[in-house]
Image 1 (cartoon, one colour):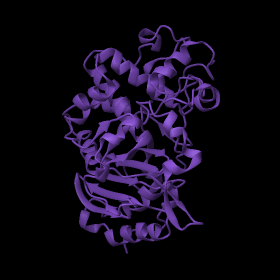
Image 2 (cartoon, rainbow, N blue to C red; image 1 turned 60 degrees about the horizontal axis):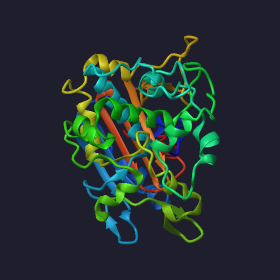
Image 3 (cartoon, one colour; image 1 turned 90 degrees about the vertical axis):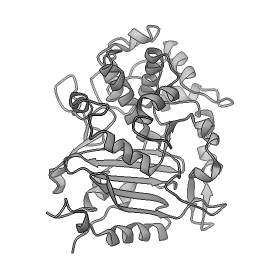
Length: 378
């Protein structure tokens, strides 16, 4: 449920690449990319995996540090990461999948599925693009949660139905990141499909993409993944000069009593699986061009202006960029995620079919600190 503030999130992605020889994998200065992440790793500012691919072909893939420091477990291609809010794109495409099947419309009212909710005018699309105007979960709802138990979507739905928590804005009036909107979308998927969210996602999305190492687990269920295959989350403690398990930090105790939420950040995946997902979105195997256009079209507010997510455009579960502003002739779609001890990012330069995947099991402030200010050529 942690929101990862995405300030200038393209800084790393854009500067990993530079120049007219963009399309030739042999032109990439992989030694330079490695030197950047090596330097940050040695400064205790990065621990994890980096994968860069062109047209589905991996030309840079390297791990830094350990998946588990206590047991000195190295990263492998099978290492699972909790990807936090990067999960939202899967929930979004779950809804779009059902729309393609004629099971629902993203213009459906939320009250069509949950008439007990006192929020008229909100559509599924509003939930997907963060313009629903729903209550601020952190400020208004978290204080009322029972911290002695694991809370999740069921508790959230009951609280929203109580009428105690007023809307922040009219639907479509403004953009504001809203985790509970994606939790509601997961409940809609369950209502329409008749399947549990994790089962639906596996059958509808993960299996067709060949993502055998990906699942939509509840936060409390990650223990079902074999320990040696799961990247444990850490925070670096300068005073002790060591990595501390993030779940032992007192300020992170909320991960236990918020462990039942899903749809907003419950997916566990691998770098190689995320590449498979990326490649699926280039094919017509599952989603039509019309569906992809809907997902990657900037959101407009009621007044006709473009909604801005920390200064950039937002689609349906994706942040959207015009690469020309960064010297790259490509539309760029991206999302990131953050959770105690976990950071994730998937960047797709669509017109160049260039993919950058960064998965970290270290609790760092933001990946924009890892920007590369020089070109990778020359």
